[in-house]
Image 1 (tube, rainbow, N blue to C red):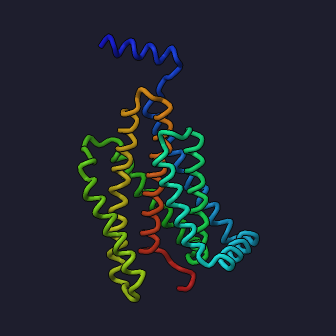
Image 2: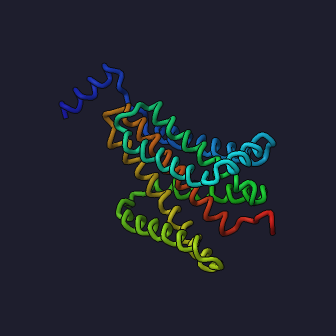
Amino acid sequence: MENNFYQQERRLEQGAVNESLGRYTAKTFLLMFVGLIVTFVTGYFLSQTRPGIVAVIYMFHYVPVLHLILLVAEVAVVVGMTSCLHKVSVGTARLFFFLYSVLTGVTFSLLFMVYEMRSLVFIFGATSLYFGGMAVFGFVTNIDLSRMRSILLGGLIFLLVANVVMWFLPGVGVMEQVVCSIGVVVFLALTAYDTQRMKNFYYAYEGDPEMQKKVSVYSALELYLDFLNMFLYLLRLLGKSKKR
């Protein structure tokens, strides 16, 4: 007990005072929300404004494999951020996060071209409600959600394989609905799981305020991905395209 007291005194003297859990959580979700705004604003600009449309046409015309390049770039950003989290500064971690948000916005520009704006707004609102409910559950529950890790990993592998199969097999409407429904459930559960993990990160790095800020960015990225994937599966299930 005395050692803990003196360690706390030393951190106070050095100015290494931890944020409260509430402030840490609020900053994490705020960063996630700002990332979503960057993604959707980027997608909207590239699909709904004349300069943006010209840029998209130019990029996809002269770089036919742009989709693949963007996918590789997004994966590289995530891998780079997660593998170097202990080494990079907080500012660099945030830069990785916003770079990923912009790259995702480029791919999202196609959604604005395919789906009706009213449908996109409705699905975004529905996703926000579902996401918010599961985030609250993950934050307040006393159930150890880490026990779900193997199930969630299996769900993600299933979704990956199923989406690859559907890519090569046309006319699988019923299968797509089933896969999308499973995808929504998986990312609902992941939202609760990652919210609880964010909370656990706070306590794990309680004596290291600098690392707390880094894992806050990492948690924001995880929650951002949960939101976007849930949004995409709901859009495939309920979205109304402009061709209908």
